[in-house]
Length: 273
Image 1: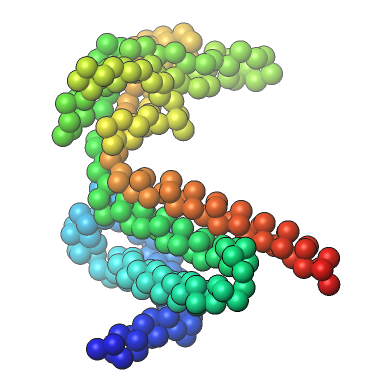
Image 2: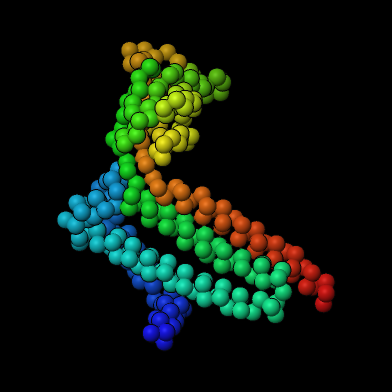
């Protein structure tokens, strides 16, 4: 059994497997390029529904145009497994040789492997997003209006619209236009009440949901006939976010370790010589 496991492990760690997977991913991506160009409408629902639901509907019934994506996911999983095995094999080798290279040298030699693990964590987050993310239909709120987040007792109340307008005179076409829409929200969870400001590229995180601003009205200081204030919200529950942040942090740590090793260790080595 131990010999069988060792053989399988060596096959997974093989650089030949890495090259083969990269070539297959390249060929599959080229196939996907033509499918996306000719049938982009089949893939647009991925922005609104989870991957599993998309495969069960659009994907399963249009295999000639969607099979490349399913194959790509399998190949990426295998490449991730290969990367994990290769990285772990190198780390185990460093651990066994740490007594010969010293603690500092051993620490900095871990840098590229830390970044490899970080990339795997980030990719796992993306997979979690596509598999388990829940996207809700657009919800519209007017000042004073509120809604309850599905599956929770938490509520969101739209208090006021407080946009930033264009005040300059260099661009007459933008006069009195909203440059930054800002919606003031009250977030209620039992006895816990807090406030937040929602804007483009500034979503609000609450009860595991990401709350995004999709549209708003009015778009100018003088609202005119269509000046009734409203905001259109998109709500997304994305478990993958919990992996993105630690993954990016770990990658940054690995990058700093690598730069320190390259700049200081190499410099000290030259001075010693």
